[in-house]
Length: 295
Ligand SMILES: Nc1ncnc2c1ncn2[C@@H]1O[C@H](COP(=O)(O)OP(=O)(O)OP(=O)(O)O)[C@@H](O)[C@H]1O
Ligand SMILES: [Mg+2]
Image (cartoon, rainbow, N blue to C red; front, side, top):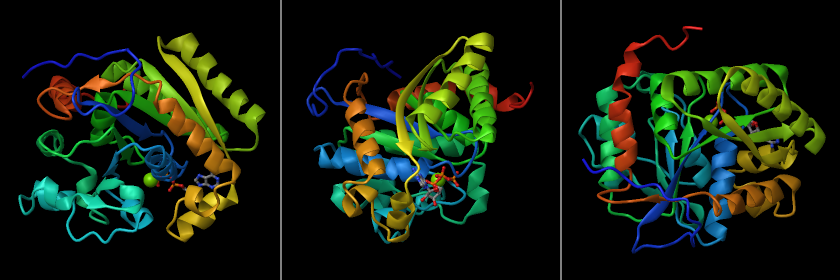
């Protein structure tokens, strides 16, 4: 298996010849903090900026990106894992041409995939012949091994948190586990549902302070998305806030976040889209046998 060269050179996003792309995992310590809303709305903002986006719904327990994207899913990842479908048959196109790989909704047995099953998903994505600029992985809430593997193998890790004290504690626990057991050292933080910029920054600084004291990690606050009822209203209507309420404060924040992606390093695709992801998962195999909650 060839290794992939990561580049720090800033380049135009879409470059089909050199096959550059980004793999971004959106994750959180605490559930219900806005990962799926953020993945969806940022994907819409990216698509409006002319980027091709693939969303991987990795919330194997409770998938809902298909509903937001307005697609009727007949088959999903569980069919691929069971050998009943090929991955290319379960890629659906939703609003703004955003592509979706749906998870297995309501199939709770999918929540704990084996390493072989995780690898088979990555392998199948790797073999895809569609081209995309950005892959956003919307991970599940809860500290499962599939969440850790997908997150740590991604090129960029975005942690979503709110300014509640429990979210802070859980975000720190997640950073600690990803750093100590999965060697992730760079984290991009989004403060969601913030009362205002100051309270978002205040919570982020608390996370940074405790992380600086006990861990050797880099945390960057990349966006603050305000608490905005329009997010809930638009999700209820199965639309993005960007489409429904383009001048809402949250829509502005999602656009701002999407524009930031442009300055992030791209990965070079060689043999396939996610070769490096697959390699990393295999390298990390031994971690699966270790206790995740040892401290
Ligand atoms: N900025 C925001 N302002 C107000 N409400 C928000 C905001 N972001 C998300 N929400 C709402 O919070 C709820 C949870 O959001 P979402 O489902 O995106 O979270 P999640 O982190 O994906 O949850 P889970 O961990 O269960 O997957 C939804 O009702 C959503 O509409
Ligand atoms: Mg979710």
